[in-house]
Image 1 (cartoon, each protein chain N blue to C red):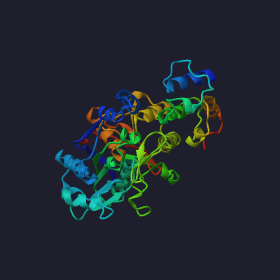
Image 2: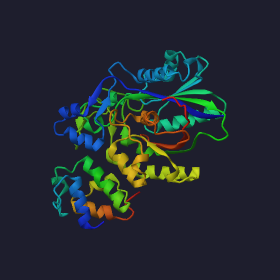
Image 3: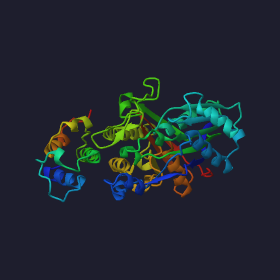
Image 4: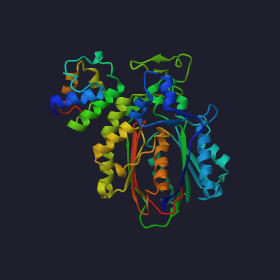
Length: 343
Length: 78
């Protein structure tokens, strides 16, 4: 048995932050310039009392409402998040209860960012092919907005909150529908995308909450998310072409054999450069961030759902997924799209 | 990439009229030399020379001409 994607749904918080809103807050930046550089015109922002689990539950309920399956049929919950409700208990356990998923189901959180969806698919394939699970609910959910300082335009222009729910079911096929998988990790880049405080290494304190302005005029404290954009860009230029090449080699196919490329939707500038660098035709390169921004581990399932919903994934389409970011962590895989997948 | 081509590309990145830069300009004096322009320079070096610039190398550049030297450097990638 192998895992197949049977359904994908996503959910955005109600509140939005438009480029015009940001331009009003940062008058030195025109809305046109923000749009041009990021390709993002709107981001969704979780309410103060709205957590990643709330977004994940809403996405999962949409999936169940589509008729893909009932909560009682789920036997494993995987939740990818870096903004859990609590240190403990595990947020996936809270979600199991809220969704009415059987107490016989397994549930766990895993802490990854933009590479997380690919890792989640890999875990799901392992659970299914080893006979440990038959219906896996893979959830990705983030409320990064809660980490951002309101005067840090370097990240407020980019990130939005969202969750996605993907149902993976066991199907009897001779060959996997997901894979091969290529993974990579380089923890030496940890400091370039980080919330420095709040964990055991450096708990939050009055001192850590004091904000200061950096050389680019962005303001943040050590309790906020910090992103070194230039370092992240350089890491991406190094790793993404490599991982794409390795995956093609491992699968024994050519770039031309791939029908659609769905990369982590970081921002327009980065994606456009990667697309040109890899010589991927624009028509085969999915872009899905203008109305939601960079939603971290949910960007790939959102883009996949939209591509399928808009008819760009006919039966048997070969899709390459590439996730990369915080950690550093990266992963890539191929999937064969099946007709009848609910989106 | 010739010097002229590089300067032309940098004019565009810094949103300056074509033909503005000569290479001797100090980066600190260029209002548009910011974090986004830095990404533009990294992308330019990657696209045209296959040179992977490390951001810490850019910090050592004083003039636009220094950026060209860096972009042309063999083995800048690590």
